[in-house]
Image (cartoon, rainbow, N blue to C red):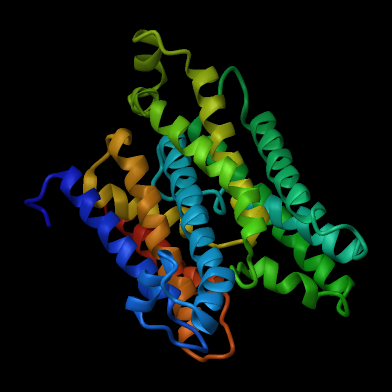
Length: 328
């Protein structure tokens, strides 16, 4: 793999993701052969298998692809802004803010319309980001300060979630699946709700990749090259928050996905963001497809939320990165 060019690695990663997606469509309490899955795409499979694929399996696979891309790119942008490989949407509090807002709606307003949950989650992510910027800003934003304030705000939001769960023990079951992170029960309506955010903001972030490379040179060098650092950082941070907030709003809190995907992508293709961002998107897709497939396939008909698998993989990986950085 080291001898291959970064572009070839990205192409191979895309092919692997497509293969995993086809296999994942067939995994569940009713196993469907990958050949039947491919044929169903062309309308050649009728009956129960075709109905299951088109109405239940395929929407959640598409959802996993969209969410994985959103969180992967969001994590890569945040790591680039803060210049820290340990940063991610959940580490600096963005997903925790979305989770707290969603928990408030679920537990305090159980009769609220379903559409209020994603709106509240997106609003919670945005509010935390504004507070983050206000506390971190002092004649410009220091990346290290931004990370530390984000960790503190995330801890406060997590404490708020735990307080609500203790305060409302009867209603807590309604919030647990969402807070864990799961693609269970997602339909084409959910896909249509999320797709515009991902399909618009991911290409925009790739177009801004060169500016992110310039920011990584340091503020003094970036300003010397004519880059308005504060405005560029604010735009990129807003894109990262929108991607993470929209993704979390639909499927819940998927821990560490925004940390693992961009870091593995960086190991594969390097630090140039024009290639790193799409690779992080594909890696996010691949990891979430694997997590969701394992959740459906290990103990059918019961399902294990995908967020549990991302946390099980992400927490040890986070500790590994931390130890690696200390060794340097």
